[in-house]
Length: 636
Image 1 (cartoon, helix red, strand yellow):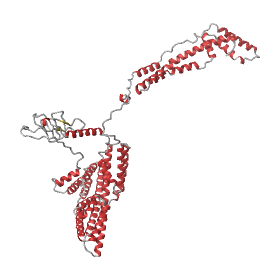
Image 2 (cartoon, rainbow, N blue to C red):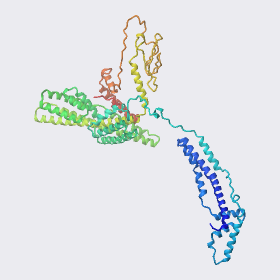
Image 3 (cartoon, rainbow, N blue to C red):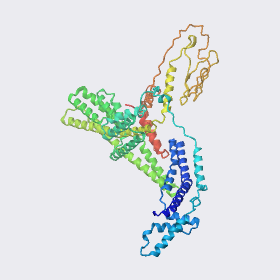
Image 4 (cartoon, rainbow, N blue to C red):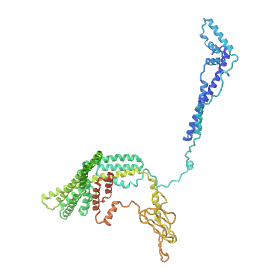
C-alpha cells in the first residue's frame, strides 16, 4: 500500500468495498451452502436419535457449517487492484482508480532516467485521487438474499420427514433394580449349567461299559463320546461343537468297521449266537459256571483261562470232577452241533436273488439305463448274499471244529498217548472258544458303539428344544403325585375321584373333580381314545378309558352297614419301567408262552431275515429291523 496522502481516500473507499464484499459473500455462502448442509446434518441427527437412541445433542452439529463459511468469507485474502477495477467498472471511470493504485504501488518500476514516463504516472495518480471524490461503496456491492433452490427444499423436506419418525422407547429397568433392591429368587430346581443329561443316562451307562472294553478302538471311541457328553453337560461346548466332534468320531468308527469287515472270515453274528446259546446250556452244569459267565460277558481271555484251568484240574484230580467235566463237554458238543446246523435263511435268500436276476434278464425294462441300474442293483445284492453265505459257512466250520475238539477232550483213558491227545484237544478247544468269543465281541461292541453314537447325536440335536414342554410335564407329574395322595371326603365319605387330564401342553389337563351324590351313573368307553369328564372344578380330556360323570359312591344306602373309613396314601412307583426285552422274556417264560424266549427269538429273527432279503424292503428299513432285534435280544 502506497503512503501517498492523496491516495488515502482511494484506499478507504476500497476498504469499505471489500468489507461489503465479505459480507455479501458470507450471506450467500450461509444461504447456499451452510443452510442445506445444516438441514442435512440435523436430519441425520434426528433419525439417529429416534431410531438408535443417540443423544439429541448431536443435532448441534447442524450449526457447524455456519462458522466454517463465515471464516472463509472473512479471512480469504482479497486483491486491492481487483477491487479498484470493480469500482471503476461500476462508476465507469475507465480504470482511473486502478491505474492510480498500480502506478503508486509500483513506483520503483518507473525508470528515473525517463522523466516523461514519471510525469505521466504522476498525472494518473493525481487523476485517480480527484476521481474518488463523491464515490461510495454501497452502490458497488448490494446486499440481497439469494433465491431458494431445489436443494434447499429437499433438505428441509428430509428434516421434516425425520421429525415424523416415532421415537423408539428405551428399555426400562425394574424400579427395584434402579433402587438396588434385592429381587426375589425364582423357584427353580437349582443352578444348572449346560444340558440336562437325564434322558442320556441309559446311553451313558452303555458307553461307560464300552469304555472298559478290551477292544482298543471301541474303548477309545466310547471314552471320547463320554467326554463330549460331559463337556456338553458342563456347558464347556455348545450343541454345534458337540455335533462336530461326534461327526469326527463317526468317521473313525466307520474306518474301524471297514477294517473289521476286511478281516472277517467267519460270520460274527452266527458265532455270537452260538456262544450265547453255549453259555445258556453250560449254566445247567455247576462245574461250568465260571466258563458260562465268561461266555455271557464275551470275555474271550477269561473263557480261555477258565476253561483251560478247569480241564487241567479235572485231568489232574480225575474221579467225579472228570466225569462232571465230560458231561459238560458232551453238553457243549450238542450245543455247538445245534448252532452249526441252524438255518439262517441266507441260502434261500441267495437262491431267490439268483431267480430274480434271471427274471430281470428275461424281462428287461424298456429303458436301457433303468435295466442297467436294476441289473447292477440285483448283482450287488447277490454278491452281498454270497459273501454272507461264505462267512456263515466258515462260521459253521468253526463251530464244527469246536464240536470235534469237545468230543476229543472227553475220555478217561490214562495211557500217555490218549492223555496227551486230550490235553492238546483241550488247549485247542480253549483257544478256539476264546477266538470265537473275541470275534463275536468285536462286532457286537462295534455295533453297540454305533447305536450309542446315533443316540448321542439325536440327543444333542434335540437338546434344549423341548425344555418348556419338559417343565410342563414335570409340573403335571407333581400335580399328579399330589392328587394321587387322595383328598379327604365330605362327611366321612371316601376320597374324591381323581380325573387324569390330557398329557400335553395344557397345564390344566390334570385336576381333581368331585362327583355330586345321587346325580346319575358314570359312563366310560374302554376302546381307543375316550373323553373323561367329572362334575366338579373343571373337566379334563385324556387318552384311555373315560371315567364318566356322576357319583363316585357305591350304589345303595350308605347307612345300612357301618363302615370304617380310613384315609390311605398311595405313592406310585416312578421310573422308566421294564425294557421291551424284559417284558417279552417275562411273558414268554411266565405267561402264555410254551417255548423259551431264546427259541422264539431265534425263529422270529430267522423269519425277519428272510423278509429283509426281499428287494421290496428299503435299506433304511433294514437298519431299523436289525436295530430292533438287537434291542430285544435275550439278556444274559
